[in-house]
Length: 165
Ligand SMILES: CC(C)(COP(=O)(O)OP(=O)(O)OC[C@H]1O[C@@H](n2cnc3c(N)ncnc32)[C@H](O)[C@@H]1OP(=O)(O)O)[C@@H](O)C(=O)NCCC(=O)NCCS
Figure 1: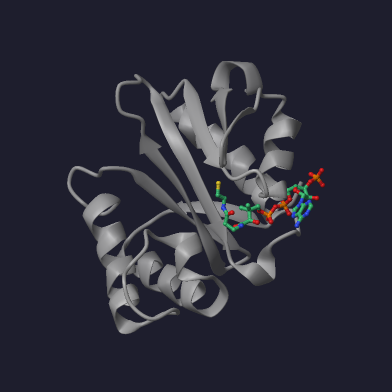
Figure 2: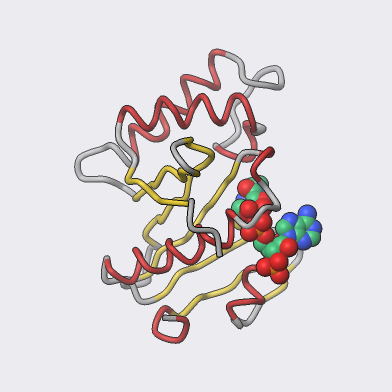
């Protein structure tokens, strides 16, 4: 397990670094809801990225929690925990890592730490939804030993934090 990966709660300074990481190393559709317009990191998408996090994670009270993923001293991605409506003590996890840092064990280290902070925050279960072709996420979930539910274009799983802790 990599020891140079840390999660830091997002603040305004980290948000700027997160935008830089996203623009340099990720596709907008991997890191934020779709925004109309030509492809790529247009000024509108950069603004929408900042607005998205300011209106959710940096809002008072926050709608969700976002952590900057830091490798060494470099921000390389984000991990989010968003409360699931109608489910007590449950949150949906979302993670993205810059392309140049993928496939090198960062995701595994992030998932482990995300489950630890979720547990510390009093959560009991984590929901994950992905696509059937997302081999890395499916591998991470399989390693946790959770049941995968396949429906149409989605694969979902509930991680019971008591069971994996
Ligand atoms: C999904 C994501 C977070 C995974 O992070 P990562 O750092 O690439 O993952 P890791 O390197 O820790 O790999 C996790 C496991 O998947 C395997 N894996 C990673 N990439 C793979 C690939 N392209 N093909 C096959 N296996 C792969 C690894 O070997 C590892 O398995 P192991 O523990 O048995 O060795 C990252 O790839 C990403 O940000 N992708 C784009 C956004 C995204 O899809 N987010 C998730 C939405 S639910």
